[in-house]
Length: 208
Image (cartoon, rainbow, N blue to C red; front, top):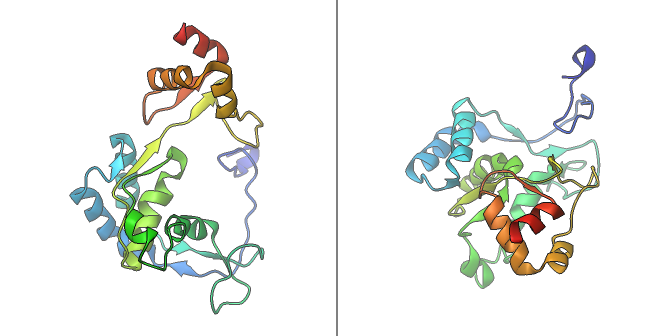
């Protein structure tokens, strides 16, 4: 919250409340199925810290998920529902499968799906370990075998983002320090699954 009880987004921008017509996915129906998935497949979510976060979230109760928008017109149209476009995460998650040929279940799809692992940022773990499995369960399609939520690579203690303008191109770093040196630094200094800091000085110090 900001001053005077103002609601702020995780990025610190004011939240603007709005009302609109929407379609819902019955996420609440899959609460028990998701908990069974986590219980029967303990390696489905890694590392353990992410797994525990997700289990606590789902155990707290799932609400049905809004999956369409009417306040803008860019996006994938909802079939048979003029004026509605798909919520961006419904569209984005399905590209894992359409990218390998779905709904054609032969060829690349048969070869590459289900995915052995999704490696994703910790800020989108919920989308990949709650919403995405529920969508796939609903469609009676195989789930990915594992989701690994890695941490952030920080620049001067801050998460890199386009909005902050502090994104560092890894290709530039590789050209400057060499691929092997960069790989060594990241493997040595950034624990898999946790946040890690980066600076040019730190790379030089570690490699030398």
